[in-house]
Image (cartoon, rainbow, N blue to C red):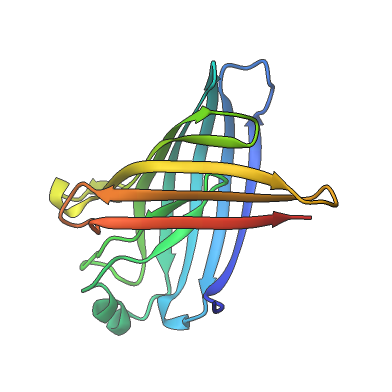
Length: 192
């Protein structure tokens, strides 16, 4: 394991009433990678969640802005697989897409969704999708967009002293030429 960067993330509850049909939150996040040539990124998103019986449904719309990227290094890095980073409590990833016109500052539109079945209070399983459409105001061609979908499992375990360990994992399959064929995600979180 190694340090890859620092990220600050905050979720502001817009509708948090348990009686409301949909919970809405606003996500605001900033990230500075360890490799300074990768610049900065910020994310602004609308997060939604609803429960239908034993199913949990999430849908998120995210706008990400990258700036202060070293254009020479960005050209070198954009030839291979796209990088990924965490977004939101759903622990889904948004992949970056190559943008030849403006490597130093770009604003992209992405989405995340998932449909999970609550097997118990400790385990949810289902399917999730992640994608990026390209520039927020000029979407990329379908084959140049990133779309992936696959099964996922989420859960939590209590420790002997009453604290919790949360985990989630997913195997996502690429649906377009610009998307990696397979993406394996795993996250482990220890709550104090």
